[in-house]
Image (cartoon, rainbow, N blue to C red):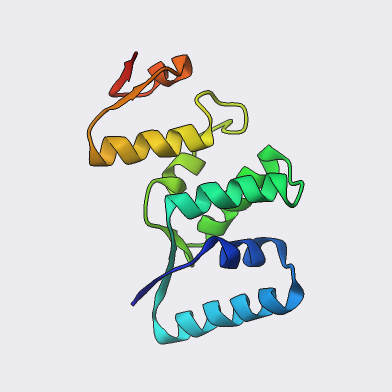
Length: 131
C-alpha cells in the first residue's frame, strides 16, 4: 500500500520537534517498512514543507532544499510528482526560475503540456508561453 504523508508528518521527521511527534513519525515509518508499505509525499506537501522550514523554523533556503533532497535520497520516502527530479537540479537555491516555480512548471507540463506565465525567468524552461 502507498501512504501519503502530510506536511505535519514530514516537518516532524525533518526537524525532530516536538520530540514526541517526531518519535511517533519515526515509529510509523518503521511500521510501514515492516509491512512493505511505501510512504510518498506530493509536490504540494514538498512546497509547503519548503516554505515552513524557512518561515517557521528559520532554515535558510539552501539548507531547506538540501534537507528535502536528503529526504528523498535514501529512497525510503518517494515523491508522487516531480519534486525529487527538481530537487536534483544544480544550484537550485539561486536558480531562476526558483524551486516552487519549477515544481509548478513540471506539474503543468506533465498534465497540460504547456504553461503560460508573466515570469520572464520561466522562458528558460520548455513549453512555456510568456504573456
